Length: 114
Image (cartoon, rainbow, N blue to C red):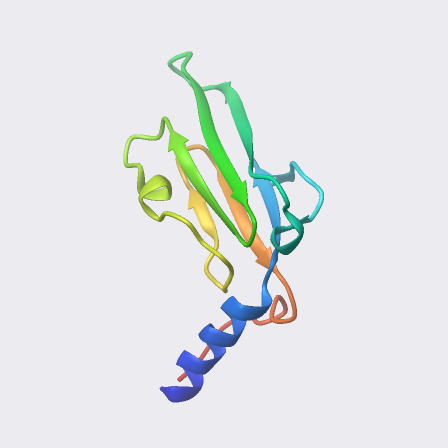
C-alpha cells in the first residue's frame, strides 16, 4: 500500500507536461505547466451531436496547474475535478470526448499495484 501511495505522490511531483486530446486527436503540442508565465484559456469547441447541439470545454492553464472551468456536458464531473497539478489521473470529459493527460518521467507507468 505504501508503494502505491508513494508512486502516486511521485507521479504528481514529476508530471508537469500535458497533452490535450479531442476525439482522440492531439489538439496542442506538449504544454509545460512549469513554464507558464501568464495564465491563459483554451476553448475547445466540438462538432454538433445528433440533436444539433455543439459541445464545448473551457480549459484554464496557470503556472503549475490546469483545469476544465466550464463545459456543457450533462454531469460536469470534469469541472468538479478542479485544478490538477500533475499525476497519473487524467482530466476527462467523456460526453465531449476530451482528455487532458500528464506526461513526465512516470508517463510509461501502466498501473500502480499496492
